[in-house]
Amino acid sequence: MLTSALAGLSILIVGDSHLTVPYYLIDSLHSGLEEQGAEVRTFGVCGTNPSDWLKPTEGTCGAAEREPGGKVKVLPASTSTIEIDQMIARYKPNLLVVVMGDTLGAYKEPVFPKTWAWQQVTGLTQAIAKAGTACVWIGPPWGTEGQKFHKTEVRTRQVSAFLASNVAPCEYIDSTQLSKPGEWATSDGQHFTRSGYQSWGKALTQELLESPTVQKLEKK
Amino acid sequence: MKSAFAATLTGVLSLSTGSGLQATEIKLYPTGPAQDSAFVRFVNGSTDDTLSVQAADSNASLELTTSSRASPYMPVTGGTSIGGTLRLGTDTESVQVKILPGEFVTVLGFDSDQKLQIREVREEGDRFTAVRASVAFSDLNEDCKQPGVQVAGRQVFLFENGEVGKWARRQINPVPLQVQLTCSGTPTGEPLNMGTLQAGERYSLFLVPGDPARSLFFIKDSVAN
Image (tube, rainbow over all chains, first blue to last red; front, side):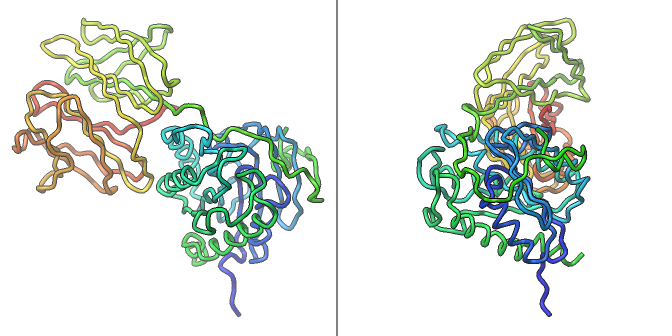
């Protein structure tokens, strides 16, 4: 009998707005991983940067969580993040999945602030490395050009390339490789419609199934 | 407001709904700062004396010895100026530095003809990587012509034809590294052991004024929390 590489793994997913509405990745990715036999916890706080997960920081635009086997719980917009090392210590996940990228894009600014982004990303990856937890970082997908958040293809490509070479020791999943630009419809240029999140979550579940980090965990 | 993840610790439950009927419009939020981060550090380039740094507008001070030469990079608001006084031996000099967004600025104090001299090295943040080590070479020495940095014991140049006042940075595999300074192609001074380079870490090699054979040192860059 074939067994999923994800079966029996304890997975903690943390991240930004893409986890904070009931039909976002907190539905499709969380459920997709559970269907593969993983025990999954998800906690998202909208608008958060990586460094916001080093000390409790209040969100401003929404939050949600979902416990293993549970339903999505939408939390007040002022919900605080929890330090990543505390979450790892409490839940002892085999795998940490970070969903963050759009909050680093500075989409309204003419220049990508890579020094700031480096400072942000390095702070969180160092904390994760210190905890010794296997991790995967999911980068930003294509959006719709312009609109409310001013997200563009050019900047998305830049942010993704930056993350690809800076999230180690986490493995990087490049979401821009999972669809064509504009293939998944957005509601505001940055967040997908229900069908977009279904597609993204399904593609990410497949990526995690084939992830070298997960394969390595399976062998342990 | 704490989340229910925290609530499992505190016993406080948060709002709960699984209906999927919430508003789907995410409120607009910033996706990054209006300007890039900026950093400044102080480095003692003297071979003999301790460099003291006193901030102009506070009691903050630093003592940088010849064995602990560098402060961490300290975050500052890009575009602002910082001022202070440097002291080396009995000599003092005031300094005023403007740090632009995205810059890593090193303020280096050293002795030349028994006088404190100050140089600024301005590096634009770039070539960040977490999978390789990153090494920079700053040439501030006019006595070493066509300075180069080789892997010690091998004819492999990491940096070639340095120019006074200029710096270069490159990515290197995270391996044990000893480097050899060359001036006009001739090995100068003893090999410098940089230890085992670590992926994601950044290093700076400085060739400061003075006898080139004694003027190359390195710093493992760090950022203050």
